[in-house]
Length: 216
Figure 1 (tube, helix red, strand yellow):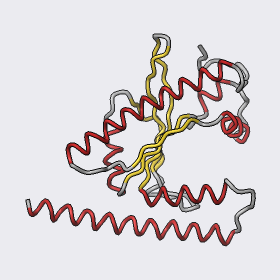
Figure 2 (spheres, one colour):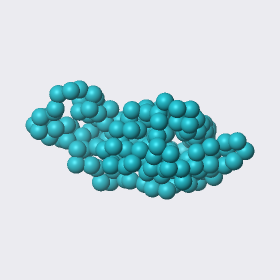
Figure 3 (cartoon, helix red, strand yellow):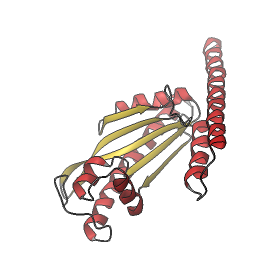
């Protein structure tokens, strides 16, 4: 079994690479299952859908190698395991911003999850306009009767954030034509508009919840 100390050069066509990706897939499935339980608990406790959608993916071999080359990492398993944190990725989409922090609070309390890094792009969006809350977590996976720590990236977004980010990615990175500076500025402006709408809808929802509590 490969370990983080392995200096073996990466060969994406060999069995070792396939086995490693299977371990990442197992970690992803495990975390998704735990998040689905969180989703059900919130629905049961509050009668409210705080998670609209959960999706997961494993980076393709091509994407992994491309990222390592971009970062100027030597193509070894050691660098892949220790330096590439988003091989396994999970995205949680919520209706409102407040839901993100509810889910975040529950993730922090999950016994099989250790948060090793976080980036808050909600309070401080990227220059492009991107918003979201990113976690790099570590979960223990049993492989051949041994527990291995595996990293998984979790992204939390509202529906509005996800709409913008998904389309921005398609426009910028899934086409061969470079985006003009004018259109890039437009995308940033639209992100700010969506963020404003996100906040306004959240405030209306909070007002309604307070009114409901007061009636009870």
